[in-house]
Each structure stands twice: as C-alpha cells, then as structure tokens.
Amino acid sequence: MEDTAKYLIHADVTADGVVERSDVVGAIFGQTEGLLGDELDLRDLRQSGKVGRIDVEISSSNGTSHGHLTIATGLDKVETATLAASLETITRVGPCRADLEVTEIEDVRAAKRRAVVDRAKELLRTGFDDSVMSSEEILAEVRQYVRVEDITEYGGLPAGPRVADSDAIVVVEGRADVLTLLKYGIKNAIAVEGTNVPDAVADLTRERTVTAFLDGDRGGELILEELSQVGDVDFVAFAPAGTSVEDLDHHQLFAALRNKVPYDAVAETNTPRDAVAATDGSATPAPAVDDAPAAPASRPVVPDAAPTCTSDDADADEESESEAEPAPETVYEHASAVVREGTDRVRFLDGAGEILEEADAGEAYDVLEDLDEVPTTVLLDAILGQRLLDLAADRGVERIVARSLGQFTKRPVGVRIHAIDDVAERPPD
Image (cartoon, one colour):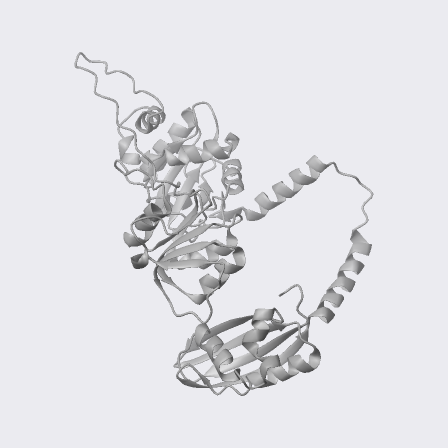
C-alpha cells in the first residue's frame, strides 16, 4: 500500500485509562462500521487495498494513554477527507472514554515530488563523477563501508555495536577480527588489541558471559592466559591451528564457535588449543607420559543447533557445559526445546529447519525486523501479540508457534499461528 498511497491521515488519540494498540484499532473498525455506507466501509477498503494498515503508537502514564495513528489511503481527496472526519466520531477506546483528533492529511505525492527535486539538485552538484570504477572495486568499497559503519568503540577499543548492552560478549584479538565477525552478523565482539588485556575488557568480563575466540597460535594462548588472570572467561574457542580469526570464512568461523568449550575444561592444561581440539573431537590428546594406561579421550561435546554468538544479542551460555542433547531436527523438536521448556527465548528457522537467529523473547520484534534472511518459522516462548504478527506477515513468515496467542483484531491469512498446547506430538502442518 505504501507504494500506491496518495495521502496519509495523521491523528492524535487520548484515552482516560490504559489502552493498547489493539484497543485503538478495534475502536476504529467497530465505531466507524456502517457510518459512511458500503462504499466507504473501512473493512472493505482495507480488503480491496484502497486503505493501508493502521499504524498506532501509544503509551500510558499516570492512568492516561496518549498516542498517534497513521492511515495510508489510495482514495481521492474528498473520500480521504470524509474517512478522516469519521475517525473523530470515536468516543471510546476499549473500556475508556477517548478523544481522537485528525491533525493532518499529508499528500504523499507532493512530498515525493519535493524529495525528487531536492535529490536531483544534489545529483547535479555531486553525481557526475568522471572517474570509472570496476565492478569489483565498487562491491569491495560498499562492503568495507558497511563493515566500518557497524564497528564502534568500547572503552577506546574496537567493538561491535551490541557490546554495551548484550548479556554475552566475544573477546577477540584485534580490530580485523571484530570486522570479520561483523561481516557474518556477530555484533557483540570486542578486541583486546594485544597480549596486555585492557582494564575495560577485564571489567566487562566480570559482568557478562564471555567467550574468548582467539587465533590458533601461541599468541592466542598468551592472550587467554592473561585474560583468565585479570578477568572471567566462561568459554574458549580457537581458530584452526596456524590461522587467524580474521582469515576464517563463514563456515570455519561458525564451526569454531560451535566447538567452543567451557574454560574450566582447558584451564589446567599447558596447551589450551590442543585441549579445545581434543574436547570437540577434532584431534586426539597427547598420550600420557607416565607408565599408567592412557586415559580415554574426552567424549565430544555436541554443540547446540545454533552457535550462541550468531546474533547481536546471542547469549554465550546457551551451550551446555557438559554433554549436550542431540540438536533438534524437526519444527516440533525446536518448539519443544524453546517453548515447552519455558526458555523465554525466540528462535527463527529457515525453510530447511536450520536456525537463523535466537534471542530473548522480548527482542523478537527488533530481531525479526533486522534479519536479512526471512525466516520460515518463528518459535516464541511468550504471548504472540498483534504487533509481532503484523511484522511477520509483512516479512513473509509462514508459521509461528508461541506459548499462547493474544487477542487479534486481524489475523493475516499468510501466517499460520499455533499455541504450543494446541500442537500435537509432531511437527505442526
């Protein structure tokens, strides 16, 4: 509807009590029904695509709710004005007395024309560059720009944008390592910039769940030793022997993170890199040097289905510190692991059932909005509300399994929604 909208109706709403978005939307449909006849019935206009979705932002304080709503229309001026006027007949929202006032009817085309003129002037000044770049140079420059734009600083050190607010962090060696992790969507990494661990990193490790992800060389081991002395380390991961984190491709990087092990498992060894490799099953420990029979190799730690560091707010303590159970394979198994177990998490799956992202349930909307790849299934250990359902429909999500379903003013036909208690002991259809 945004591409074909001619006008935007802006209105303010005030209610003498605490109300939510769904209450406002319900009042609009309910109290304007039949008011203007069949040709301007709001439900019919929505179904025909002549009116877009109703966007409502509302908040409450001191027992009173205030908000703003926007409706996009493809109607002509007279019809749009009439529809806008009908909104002001609303006197109640939910159980509360309310007042709705139209503040503006914006001509979208006029705004676009102004934007076109302004942009054309700018292009005339700056857009005609005589230099010619190859396709490879263009792509390389754009990629570098995106990566550098994402990188920030924490305590004067290179860091991803989520380090300051994430419950878990990944400690790496240098700025190039942070950029590599950003390239693959990991936004909670911070660099120590050498073997002398800065106080900012040491202090941060005492407050967060920490994964040390280091180069597969002696320098990585020295940084781990220093970090363990001045801070707290929960998990350890190394790049393959002789390689650096910054040189890893997508598969190698996430394989290394999936094979991370608890720090306690390597703390007593002189060669933590070998201990990590032996624990994850990718190498065999050195034989014992005394005459006693050699101890059996540690059993492999089976990682969770998704590395805990694949998202901006992923928790590094999701992997079990002992033998983990086999990773879920079906949608039902994922739903049981996330929702039936009461994890307060949300998990996003692609069409093959692979995990795209996982986060706290309260961050479900923001994470879904930011995901580059559209998930096929969303598993939510929380009540599914209208706002998240609308976003899922807009993005093309096919199925949602939630702890329970909220009250909906509309249920998009393109999204199948299930409460976990209604899901049989098999993947939902």
